[in-house]
Amino acid sequence: EAAQKYKMPTRIPPEYTFPFLDIDDQVIVMLDQLDYLYKSSGKKSPFSYASYSILKQNESVINLKDKLTSLRGIGPFTEKLILKLINERDYSYLNNLIHFK
Image 1 (cartoon, rainbow, N blue to C red):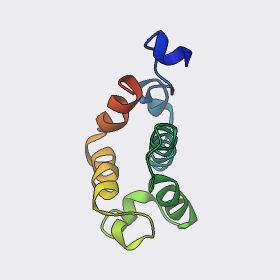
Image 2 (image 1 turned 180 degrees about the vertical axis):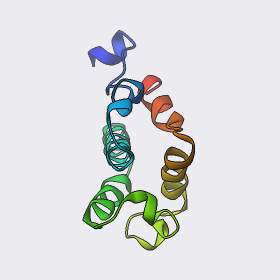
Image 3 (image 1 turned 60 degrees about the horizontal axis):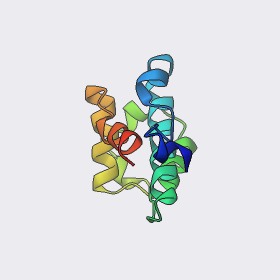
Image 4 (image 1 turned 90 degrees about the vertical axis):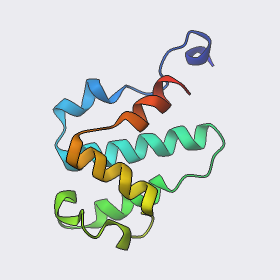
């Protein structure tokens, strides 16, 4: 793939898009991008279902942060990534996958 040959990110890095999104959209975009990156490298991904579960809720992800693992598709690791994004605006795991795929 050209992106690998020229060492370009395969997705748009979050630092270029996240400042324009609210926190709910940031979480969904992060999960969707993680899903793409996992699947494109041949790994099984829980992130698509996690994204879908959050989208189905009628409240902000901030209000869900104490009960994330009760949602289908969200285990301890996914919860940790979501909470880091909510509490610290930290998306370093996604950024590392994008830049070093």
